[in-house]
Image (tube, rainbow, N blue to C red; front, side):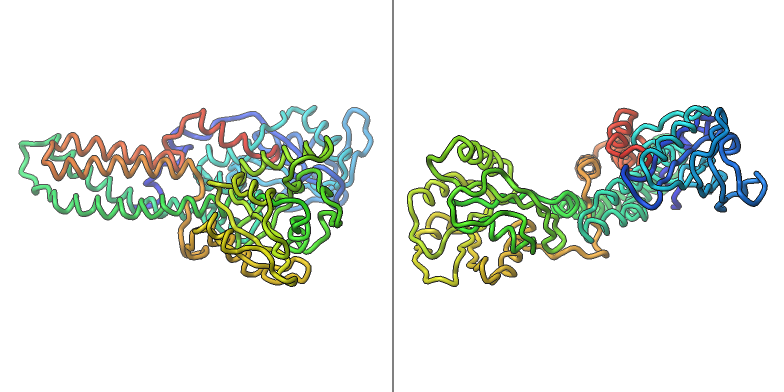
Length: 475
């Protein structure tokens, strides 16, 4: 079955309707070499002709070519900026509508002025994600590909970027079409027997359908199981570095980041607030949080820092509990042991360059099944073992991401796949118990609807709004 297996939204809504023209600044705010104002809709060419004066050629704007000229304020007759303008005729555009991009100098005031002129000439300011939403509604991309656009923008590691590219290339949709082909084939057979019971049709192979359902459920199960790994690679994790004062928490943060991000002194309580930075550990975006040392007493500022530390520990996906290997365990260490009970954690014994005085046996008695890594932040030793422990504790020893391995990283996709599998399970049970074909056909239709939600075939307007409001304006 071809891509038509999942009807595009434009086919569902009918021909592309005349919509208003939208415009927005498509590049980040600030100072840069180039800034772009993007327009999409039926009036872009008329607006461009009213504002743009070419330097050399005529006002004939050839599609998909850059034209050099000036943006002129038609009311005042004065130039606003020297620009490159490109007109792109539908349907060979991002939105499948007529599109104009005005490439200006990258200053905030210039871009704002050009946008104001465009809006004054009849466009309206685009909503967040509205360009991509139009691409989806006009059938250029499916919903999974639209979601991939925002994932590409926010990707923090090569692995999270590759997962987004998988989705943008339509990998998930193509995989789903194989299952959909099977479901549609089985429904055709069942509904033929339901609608034409008097006809002499080939008997339905219940064993064949049951076997196919079992195989489809196994495939769906593999994608569902990949979600936890995909979520971590896509969204990253929060990791709190905790411990009592002067055990080397800030030093550890600095050596992991390879920069002097946190102040390090021998004075207890130097770190008063939580310092956060993102580190790439084997493709996982790890948001490291250096926290204030946990201890009793201190001034009001340090007490507030300790309170914030406890909040971060409660919310963290992973805790690095740092201990001073050159000192014996004390009351503060043991109090922290109780604070981190029940958390996913790694014990980091620092200062292994000094004579060992800590009781590792007592530590392991408190945390018998927890990774324990010995390091020296001062001499930067043991960091490879620590990163490996972080990876294994988060992905539980799973194989690291491969481009050939389909990863489901979106909770919406996961929930729809689970609904699909549940419907197939009920259909399979009905086949095994010899229930009517009507029951099995109903469950197969439910499974098809759940699959359709993933690509946007059966998605509600409320869900669409929630997806596209995550985008920035201009995309």
